[in-house]
Image (cartoon, each protein chain N blue to C red):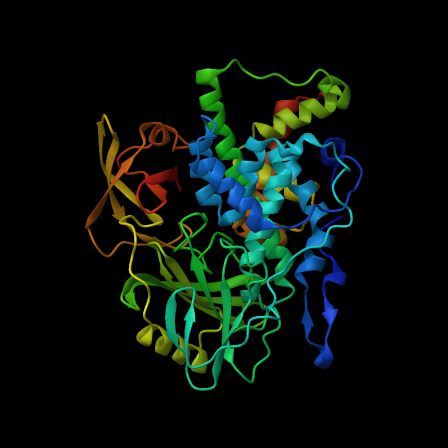
Length: 342
Length: 178
């Protein structure tokens, strides 16, 4: 590092230190109540004029936590100066609940009826049992540890108030795991399909990620039901018995009926644009994409959306949206709530 | 502090290491806040970004199997959430321009930073997204090229390229003012 770099580094760190102040303990980690506040603000009357564009970005950036962020901005939760956070805070983590018994056989998980393979069980990972809390179950052979990080397969519910559902990202939500840790990715394959999951249309994705130099391979497989109520079945160890179990569970599942017409999340190319009094009418050429590196577009069929004009006009970050733009669309099931160039 | 918290790893019988989400949160919140502040240039937004990132990790915790991956996973989430925060800030500013006069810094802003800090900050802010991210990850988080590649999704070659171009742009922008 030469003198110029050293100077730049020093100044940048001093700048950051000046902004963040003295080291402090983290605030309480409680995503669910904040997510509910966010939902109330964004979908309610208190919404600021830029709330919807914020929501658009939030849906891309993901998980209910993004809602936490924007809502916090709107709510001016940062009125307290640095250092006033509750230092005695405890955090919550998705651990098995002590009250919910392990389930086996044919089970009802968040309204979905799943038949687990013989010897398998479902363990509730939900800890914060508020009505809108994310529900996550570990599906695993009963003989296997369900300690965090050991679960071979998870099943999650998604409601329309939780942004961040992402069919194109490993795990089904916006958060891209680093399967190779500090190692580099030596190779990656990607496959996509639309499959039936308990009577509902699901987006199936498979990634095979090979790490190097350690010869380790992750076989990721997931089914995302992208309409409300949404569901995600996910495994990063989709081999052998786990994959067989996954196929069996999908094949025998019964999911509740779709309750709203629009997908909660969609990705594709804009093929037509028509401005009308009720919004911008677009047709979307849906694709499957591996973070933009690989695009699978098996069909020329398009899907119609009506996007609020203001959101459409502010949806691009390298220029206005138009025919040919690749976009992410988020909805609450009945209307588009976000559109964002990706 | 970099994101390499060794104490995240808890020894278990059989030598298998597993992180605790609580430990991850307690130990990594501060370094991630510093990183996010460098990326979004606003501590309040950075706090939200970090919360977003932890929420993402929380949501996927059951699927994180490799304890060594947890910090990298989190760091990438911070980078992704920062990108989104900057984009929604751009969007919000478009609306603000439509409806409000441009906001100005607080009266105490000038006392917080010297002219040199301001120069570097502004020059960095004008860099393309990838170059700015790479330099921030290198200088604020003290990461090596391979780790920056993981956090940004760039190849190691791309990281080196973005770094050298970013530095060259900073030199040109600062024009010997440092």
